[in-house]
Length: 52
Ligand SMILES: [Zn+2]
Image (cartoon, rainbow, N blue to C red):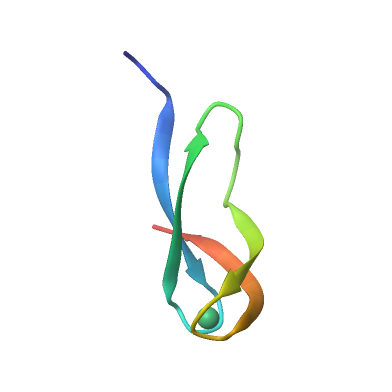
C-alpha cells in the first residue's frame, strides 16, 4: 500500500505544546499546515502549526 499520507504533529504556536496528531496528503496539501485549535495548556483557541 503506497499511501502518500504522512503523519504530522500540530503544536500550539503560543506555548509550543504538541496537542494534535493528524495526517495529510502530500499530493494535495502544499506548504505548512496551520489551523485554529483549542489548546488545553493555554485554555483557549490558538494557532497550531505543523511541527517538523
Ligand atoms: Zn498553547
